[in-house]
Amino acid sequence: MEHRVALLGCGNVGKALVGILARKRDHLKARYGVDVKLTYVGDIRCGSTMNPRGLDEEKVLEGLAAGKLPDPFGTIPLEEVIRLSGATIVADATPTNLATGEPGLYHARSALSSGAHFVTTSKGPFAVAAAELEETAKKNGLSFRYEGAVMSGTPLIRLIREDLAGCSIESVEGILNGTTNYMLSRMEEGLSYDEALREAQDLGYAEADPTADVEGFDPAVKLCVLSWVAFGVELKVSQVDRTGISGLTSKHVQRAKMEGRSVKLIASIHMDGGEVKAKVSPVEVPREHPLFGVRGALNAATITTDHLGKVTISGPGAGRDETAQALLSDIISVAKTKI
Ligand SMILES: NC(=O)c1ccc[n+]([C@@H]2O[C@H](COP(=O)([O-])OP(=O)(O)OC[C@H]3O[C@@H](n4cnc5c(N)ncnc54)[C@H](OP(=O)(O)O)[C@@H]3O)[C@@H](O)[C@H]2O)c1
Image (tube, rainbow, N blue to C red; front, side):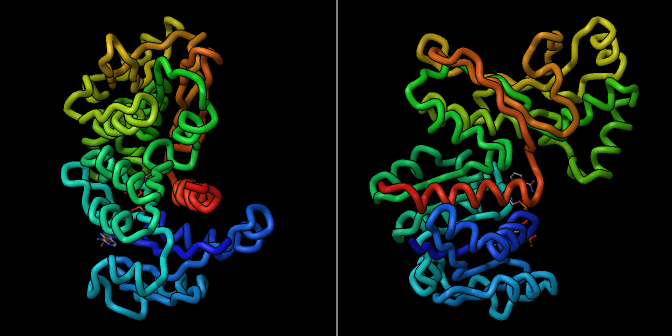
């Protein structure tokens, strides 16, 4: 089966997806019977290129490396891009704006109202319009997928939605932010908060403005995604009881370590009397806790279910190829789904 993909946003993740598609074409055909053709690539910084018969990914990569694709970007509306490129799937890897959901929200609305499935790594559209987008997709017989929005390519969303089908989810508890977990691990090893933050910034884990990570906004938004996936309830970030790690000192972290506990920024969600309760806060977890040994930039989550008890998944929570893998797995899922 052939699927034509229009890719929007070609920074770290988008570029990695183009590379993976170039390397894996034969594997995708042989293993899944899916012929994924890239027919449009558009990036606000590098320009755009289109070929409804399929672009040469190597040429696209050359253009991206030079920072210049053949055509200008944004001169035609996305609906027209979808029609002209014959795209059946729009893959979005544009930056996340949690307040407006843009530009992913515009991409999602345009794709789903133009007959194209929509896959994204951005939490933005979700933070603003999860229910609306799911409804539009359903009404139009299309898929809206966002595996990369939580734990990058580590398939937490698919695990909850598909592999645990039939189980009732009682709670999800996780380390959903690699930057703060890295900082806490280094503080356990003796670094001060400022030293750990500087190191995380030098390694590219933390932004120049680290507020979204250290104040817990990033895991709070991820809980909003999980609220929808696990409980079908639309939750806003303002409804998450949120404390970050900026009030912690290495003295606090090391005292917990001496007492056999490890400080983690835990994001948790459960139903309580028909209401979703979501919380992000530093917790001293004991040695026997499933998240005790999760160190460095790794992410992990424990899902408590009725039939299976506790299921824990851990893996990368960020990275170029790791997040492009989330887009790829969503593309394959869409291709294999008969809606
Ligand atoms: N990188 C990760 O490890 C990771 C992990 C999980 C989720 N994500 C999410 O994945 C998305 C992409 O991440 P990234 O690291 O690849 O970001 P990035 O390197 O900043 O790439 C985004 C690209 O999209 C471009 N862009 C901005 N607005 C656009 C628009 N309206 N249309 C088309 N292109 C546009 C940007 O150009 P300008 O730079 O000029 O704005 C940039 O080239 C983000 O939403 C991020 O939160 C990333």
